[in-house]
Length: 371
Image 1: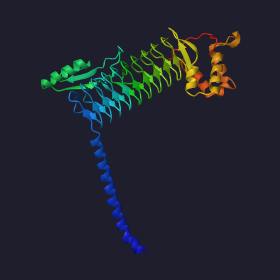
Image 2: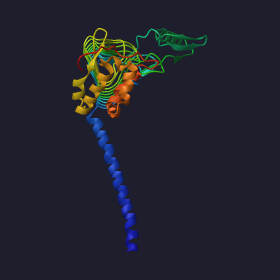
Image 3: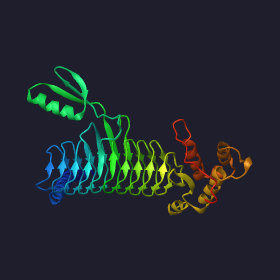
């Protein structure tokens, strides 16, 4: 048996090597055939810089432009007249509709995740509208080193290069935008990069940003939010998850909108909206809990009942002896039943966060009859 094993061992090793070589060759051949079957297609009128990195199966339509620092993932589609500028990365299967513009020739970068749709004439990842941001570069040549705007730098770099002078360009104010996966950004929406290199404009996953919405510099958006047409977010606004705005909503800078909140149409927010709540009005006021939204998102009857009880104790107490706002919050936190309900604790913490040192407080409230 030992002799037979010694004879078979080299034979089995040789067989495994041949099988491994054959399998590897087949895998490489399969990858090559997939690439050949799924080539990228560029329309003759499209301008695609040779330094751009283009994945497999990318379709670039008529009169598109793709800059030298762009990176397009597999399966991306650029409809006619869409453009990609600056240091911009698109994940797999992104779609740019006609007229969409992504990225800008500024220091910093724009990163778009996978499966995102950017609508007709939407503008994503461009310079912010904060007057403090200049997008400056250090421009150095043989005679000086100074800070200038991009237009000045590019003009003088080309002039110095043509004159044979040595020069260099260094970014000063970098700005960034990061977008997650599965977002739909509809027509004429605008999303701006951050206003400084230490911050980011961030959009999570599965958001619907409808037509003509504006997301300003340094905003932080979570996941599964819906922003109806003409929702305008000023700089540094934070929106958590599953929030919903109706049309023509305006949000003041540095405000926070909590998870599962609902903002009524035409509202103007100058203060925070705590979790689970509904506000509306020209100067938005609390109108109770977002009950329908909570039901749709699968909150249990017990959770909703506990939230309603806590809301009434905090905002609708008619007893003169009920104490101050702070005392009513403390009462809910110490309640023998409500204190052990996670959603109630989350709501109370959301309220308290709005009254920290840099918080804006919550939208004003009245003693409404129902919630």
